[in-house]
Length: 105
Image (cartoon, rainbow, N blue to C red):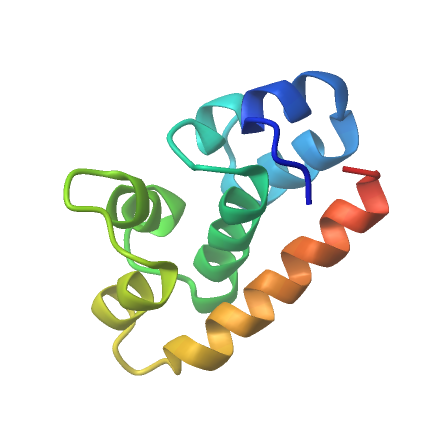
């Protein structure tokens, strides 16, 4: 995965930007603001959709990027306690990697 900031990648990669918008309902630049890299943003978007997280992507993003930020796994444990955080994180990271590969990021 690229080490460029999410906004750098999104500015020239409309395929992944469109995927993020379809997962989150937000413009990709807005959705990914605050994430360390694009892969984290895409993985979080998949988790929110896969688990139908209460509060959606924004609630998950707040846990992962906000004050006192935590790992995606910890955020899953808090927002969807009945889910397997480990397997859901692994699944979302694979989905994100596939999306990035398909889009050429």
